[in-house]
Image (cartoon, rainbow, N blue to C red):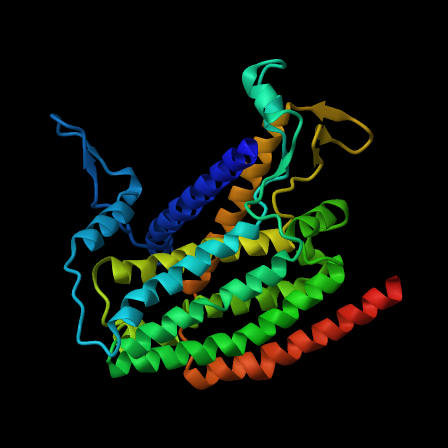
Amino acid sequence: MMPDLLVHGLYIAYVLGFLLGLATIFTWVERKQSAVMADRIGANRAYLRIPFTQVKLVWWGLFHGIADGLKMIFKENFTPATYDRFCYNLAPWLASVPVLLVFAVVPFGGEVTPGRFFEPGSAAAEFFGDRSWRMQIAALDAGILFVLAISGVGILGTMLAGWSSNNKFSMLGAARAASQMISYEVAMGLALIAVVVTYGTVDLNDMVLWQQQAAWGILVQPVAFLLFLTASIAENKRIPFDLPECESELISGYFTEYTSMKMGLFLLSEFIEIVVISALVVTLFLGGYTLPFLRPEGFVLPGGATWELSHFAVVVLQVLTFTAKVFVVGCFQIGIRWTLPRFRYDQLMDLGWKFLLPLAALNLVVTAVVRWWTL
C-alpha cells in the first residue's frame, strides 16, 4: 500500500512539473522560434539581477515566461456582469483540468523497479522489494478511450466561458469552437480507430511495445499520423485553426471578458495541450519512450553485441528519450503556427468534413482490409 502511494505520488508530481515546466518553455520557444523565422532578435529584455551586483541574467529571454505569469497573477481580477457567475468562474478550470488529466494514461517510461536503485538489504530496498511499476500514472487497459472521453470535456469550458460572459464576441467564439471541435473530433476518432486496428490494442503502453518490436507507427500508419496531428492542432485552436479566438475579428473570442489568472488558465492550457498532443503523437506514432536497440538490460546491438547498463541508467534514458521527442514535436507544432495563414471559416469546415473525414474513413477501410489479409 505505502509503496504504491509513494510511487504514484512521485509520478503525479513529476507529470505536473513536466507539463507546467515544458508548457512554460514552449511560451519562450514560440517567441524565439518566430523571431528566428522572421529574422528578428526576439524576447530578450526580461532578466534577473544577482543581488548587490550589476550582473543581469538574461538567458536568451527565458525569464519572459516567468514575467508573464507574475504579471497575470497581480493583475486585477475583474468580473463583468455575467449571465451566470458560477459558470463564468468554472469555465477556466473545465478548459484546463481535462488537459492535465489526459496525460494520466500516457506512459513516459518503461517498467521501473525502485528496489534496484538501492543497496541490497538496505531499508529502502526492503521497503520496495522486487515490485515493478509501469511509468504511467493510470495504467488503464482502455487508455485511448480515456483520452477520447476526457479530451471531449474541454469544449464544455469553452462553451460556458463564451455563454456566461454576456458578450457577443465571446458567444460567437464559443459557437465557432464547438462546431470546430466537433468537426475535427470525428476525423481524429477514425484515425485512432485505424491505429487501434493496426496495433490490436487500446492500451497505450502496449502500443509503444508493439512499435519497439515492429516499426514506428508513423511508418505503418502515415495517413493516420497526419490526420491525428492536424485534428489535434485544430482541437487546440492554434493557427491556422484559431477562428474561435482570432484577434482581428473577435478580440480574444470566448475568453474576451476574462482577466488575471482566469485568462492565464486559458492561455496556459493552450501550451499544456501542445505538450499533451506531442506526447500522444510520440506515444502513438514515434515509438514513445523507446530508443532503438535499448532493452531493459541495456543496448542490444545487431550481431549480438551488447552494452549492459544499470537499471537506473535505462530508466533515465527512457525518460529523456520521451522528453526529447515531445520537445521536438512541440517545436514542430509551433513552427506550423508561424508558417501557415489563418483559414477562412468555410475553408476550415471544408477541410474537416470534405477532406479529412473521407480520408480518415478510407484509411480505416484500407487498414481493416490489410489487417484481415495479413492475419
